[in-house]
Length: 177
Image (cartoon, rainbow, N blue to C red; front, side, top):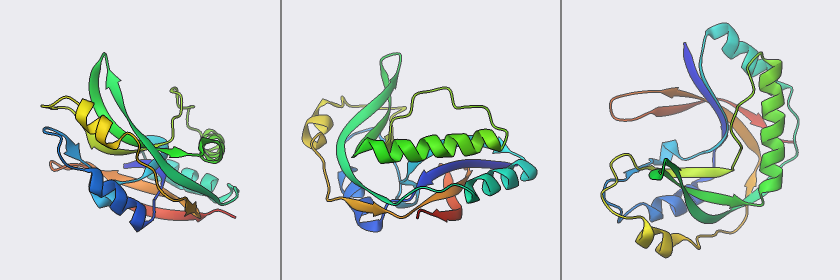
């Protein structure tokens, strides 16, 4: 079985900018350099044949290159309890358009549609055992931004769950045209 997702691998200078934020929040489980990505579609566990179908569907996807920039921080919560801290991107329209094409490709590969609304972001921390309020972090970093960076491809990732956290491996890169 393969645990898969599709995402954008940011350039190293963008990852460095994100890594610079990761401090001063007791109980946060910060993402590593290798874990930083912008998810386009989570797939989950699939067998080898389905993984091949997914890869083939992604091969046929065509989308123009575009640029993104980091834009602000936010968090996801569950029933009022913070779960994840993220950095947003702008503009949202080109990445949402790519997400929609990925979603169509996944339906062609036989996967059901993803049920939740899509918000383009890069997760920087998991907050399961957060020991401090987020107010200070949000105030200090809420205005994060960056120069635009090119998005020239997207990736099929495999995620291996370990005791120390997930390990993400890029299986294939798909160039944008």
